[in-house]
Image 1 (cartoon, one colour):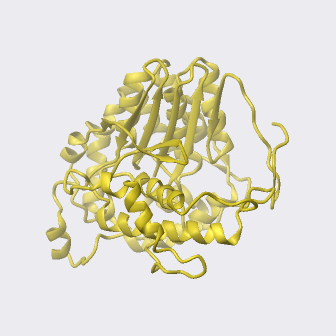
Image 2 (cartoon, helix red, strand yellow):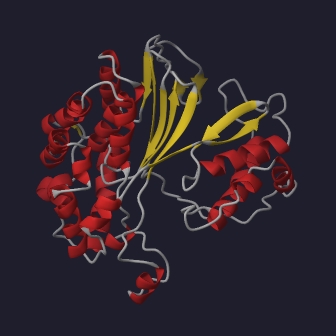
Length: 381
């Protein structure tokens, strides 16, 4: 760690390395990924180890029941790949079925809000294509954390306290949530050791039987039965049918710099559209960014307005591309960006507020680069 730039909150330390790097939102997950790189693992191995560790120490942000979107740089082939590890709704429910159950919109909580989790399948597919180390080696750091425990930390404690009443409302107070996350029916104290033996057993089962066991076998049966018992439409066949998909990234340029992201159904399209709109409005002027890298009010205003415009397009178009023709080329057209930029007033909000997640959370980001130049950029929910 070395000295870095100074932010409004104090000095920002920089971590430097010459044989690889891992970035993650919890230091124990970062350590898990680095341990894999030190053993000669591929960036994909380290990304899986980091993601699995985050599923233990940061379950408010991700988990083995979530979805993952990967960008993978293959240094040998000089090619970037997109791996879609998101799941669809179970076959036993559709929009008409939701309406028949009294839902005018897609439920945000409860069993009917749950799609088939795709993260573990994406681990399997990425590992099969690029992995160097055994699955035992890759998942061992997460299994150790779940078995031996980790210190309760502020964000984890806050998430448990906020989530407990929501779980009670959605699935009833008898759910296993409190047994696992709120033993003793009281808040965790900072630094108390949190253990997750059931998660450790599940991860060990995936090592012993292969990651595919999450979708075909006892684990899939138990997931389907549990969700069905709560009123869900899930069946073991939905898990068995789930597959990841490989594809190519989408991209734009921002003042000559190539920027890539995951294609829809991922929402990276929004970020590219924002960059296009900002570029169309002209480059930042002298003094836009202060010595700490903080933008002035005018640039923040422009960015907010550009984001609101892009989010309107997201809400109109972004969905499963198997069911809707998403006009990606038009949305990323520079002429269209100029048209949107022309709607932005420099001194007042001209775009209605779009739908946003005001609370935040529910997704993690991690990045890995190994000594051979392979790289992973991944989000998981």
